[in-house]
Every structure is written in structure tokens, then in C-alpha cells.
Length: 122
Image 1: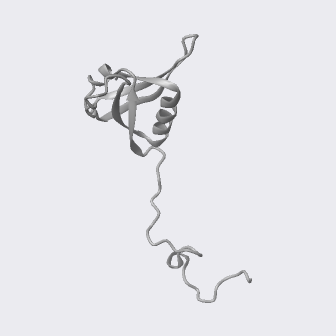
Image 2: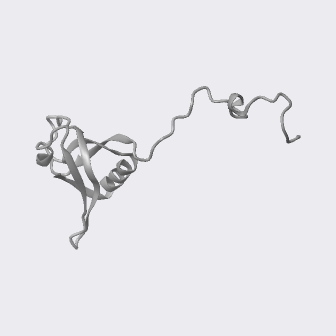
Image 3: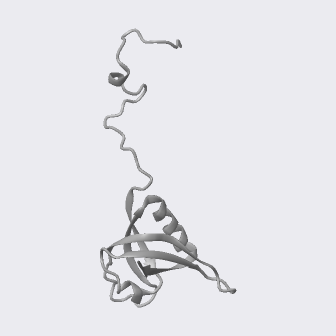
């Protein structure tokens, strides 16, 4: 194995990547890129008040014997969709789809596993 310049003198931009050339350009992901995040809000009646275009803060309330803590996990999230609940479902909250940055979507998903989520209109 020898290291050093190649003899064909192809310009670096025309040469592309060594090894496996990319057939399509790689799209750069921006940290603040908005994604759709389905979120189950504990109080279904609150969700019925929401409309697409509304802005909400999402609060996670930890449940514990001592009362638990509440923290804001998303600020100013835009409501993109409020799906109709299935007729058979009467408990368990209601679903809302929010447009949020990718990192916020991850925080929402994590918070929903350990806390009850609520929204406040902005």
C-alpha cells in the first residue's frame, strides 16, 4: 500500500469521495429543522380547544407521592393537526400533532414516557 498523490491529477471536486462515491449529494440536517411530533395530552378536553395554527407550550408533570415536578418541554410549538379521536376511546387523553425542532421532538417523546403532558395556549 502506497500513500501519496495519484497520477491522474483529477481535481478534488471532480474526484468525489474515495471509496464509495455518493450518487446524490448529502443533505445537511439543521438542528432547528421542524418535524411533526404526535403528542398525547393527558386532558382530552383541552385538546378539543386547539386548532391548527395555534401556539402552545407543553408542560410535563411528573407523578409522585409528593406531588411531583412540572417542567416546560416545548415552548411556542405550532399545532399542525388535531386528529379526531376514535369513538371507542373515552380515556387516555387526546392526540395533537405539533411542529417543533427535532431536539424538542426528542424531549417530548422522552417526557411522555414518564410524565403526564399538558398544554397552555400562547
